[in-house]
Amino acid sequence: MEVKIEKASIKDYDEVIDLGNYVFSHSHAPTDFPSILPKLYKKEHFMDGIHYIVREEGRIKSVVGAYPLEMEFSGKGSSGSNNISPSLSLPGRGIGMVSVHPYSRSRGYMKELMKTALDDMKKDGIVFSCLSGQRQRYEYFGYNPTGSLYAFSFNRQNIMHSLGPDWKSKLSFRPVFKEDEKILDMIQAFHQSKTGRIRRQREKLFDILSSWQSEIYAVMDGDNPIAYFLFITGRTGEKQISEININKASLLKNPSLYAEIIGLILNMGTVKNIQVLASPLENEKIDQLSRFAESYTITPAYHFAVLDFARFTDPFMKIAARKKPAMEGSVIIQIGEEQKMRLKVSGGLGSCDAISHDDLSHDGITSNVIVLDRVEALHFLFSPLAQYKFPVISENSFLKNLLPLPLSFEKTDGI
Image (cartoon, rainbow, N blue to C red; front, side, top):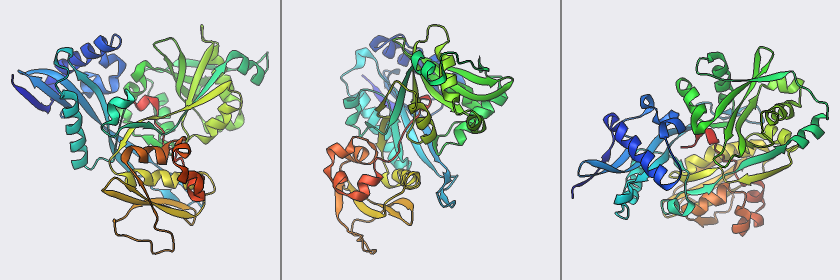
């Protein structure tokens, strides 16, 4: 049997989509990739050379997609100086549509395609990769769930006691359509104002926001849009606001806007309970939501693999140092055999720099080295549970003050 590993081209679109739909429908639930993820699988968005495929006798039997991503950072330090350049971005690739035809399983196709995709990422200077899926299945390739995502739960009683039993709102909602250019411009501006974010192409924004079967709503104050949210109904019927952003000027005038908007959502149809997601980078949102939520949970943000830890960690060090009073200090971390880096806070500025294996401290800071493997490093740097696994965090005042670094990932940008 002739077996070939290659990359799919535009002409393979129908066969790639058919295989993905068949495999996921067979293994999980009825699946139609172009409707679930239009940002990736609408024909006009399908890209040459990003799907790794195995052909048996000319027919595609396995697929692994490696989709380009960019993580962007911007903002100013507490001193007013530029702590993170507005142009700083990290190249990444998201893994998706991992599919093997049921009749071609146990032949090692998925492992071979994942290895090829990761080898190409290293050659191309990719800094990070991410995906969703069963934890142990992808841990072999260096992926692991980490970071933080807050989920606040609300019911109607929370709103009634927060706003009063007779509360009323002059706000209204309306769906957002592809033709609503001004509202989509507003949504893009909200996204661009975030300290850390996945880059979203404006020309694809409607399809990005519509992915994962999200409904897009604008919050209207009369004829003026002041906010938006993405509403998702899960497969088991749970209701979730995966993304909500409010105009800052409107929020200053009315600090109860989050409660009003969530209250109006809870009055829609049969919605009795809802979750609202927030990232650790959204201090103000977390503060507001925590004031009237019934409860909250903290979950891993996404599954990550990091190929260049120093480059990936540096912007999060800068953010962490400006989010709270940062203790001065430094530690050296060695990851595997090939990467060594220094976490440092000096003069109120955080940084992470790659250093050579024979580099010793010249600034009076200890050169003791913390040795971790790649998966351990993900947890050590970014997991809120790291202090329970790594006693050195609790024992080191600098690390205890600094970690976890505020890594998150918005559901909208999932692959």
